[in-house]
Length: 343
Image 1 (cartoon, rainbow, N blue to C red):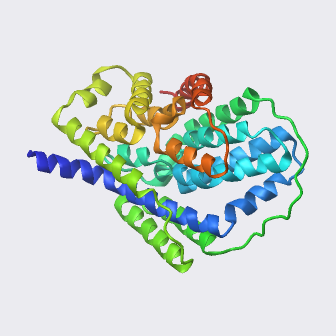
Image 2: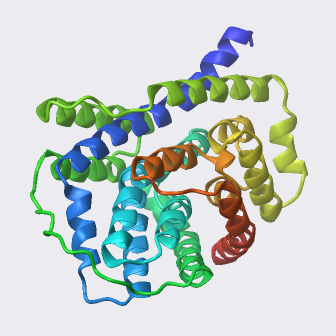
Image 3: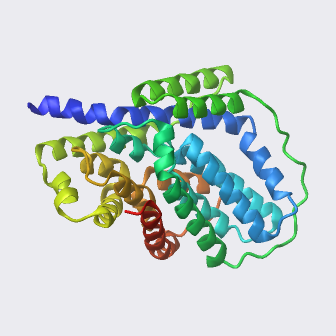
């Protein structure tokens, strides 16, 4: 095959995932403008829960939104909600801050649309969302559970003085309708190209109705798309990355390779690089690609978006703390997720 043909093949594998995340980010922007996430988070913050109970409830919210709407949408719009809830209760905001991104990565295992890497790997052998969810549910439960327990115990979570303020109103606006429509499309439409374009259409329609400027990181997405296509082309011309997953060991090795490659070059390019040919252990590879980025902020687009979201609410982020926590969390998450899948 010619170089141009290989480039087209790599681009064909990658583009539905990037179109989907663009649509989801637009929908998330409309939902945020409608106050949907703040209303939900505010009600959870005022619930009669202890400090750890509140943290676990909000991490559960992150897991649900991530599974349905994609982890990038989750970190962009829920990180400020979690930080705001902690400040409203006078609680140390660090477990809410780091927990939002750790849980988003862990919870992105459930549906194909929950993480771009899922779509990139599944491009070679697409599965219906319900089938994929049934297969990955044990790993999803394991990863989310260990992440929630770890975050709740890694920090001293103590209650403080509740800040006075009015409850944000809850309204069924364009954001809620668009989010529900996107969830249905992601689950009901098995073809990744069709579902991605449909979600993008919903995002554009919702943004137009609300007369908002689309909140999409076009420069970041474009740069990552270019790198993804370049590495995907390289993988097709040079077969070593694909053979590494076939000849280099079993499922546990595939997860390890996925995690380390994600840290080296981001999990989106890593997904295309390692799945140019159908991987021997796709589920294990996805565990590594989805959970592995919790080792360092270089591992995923979600971490970059998380940094931007944290800065928007003036939350102090330590990259050293992120990796120090990840060095403990990721091995446990990988081991329990793979054990849950019985690989």
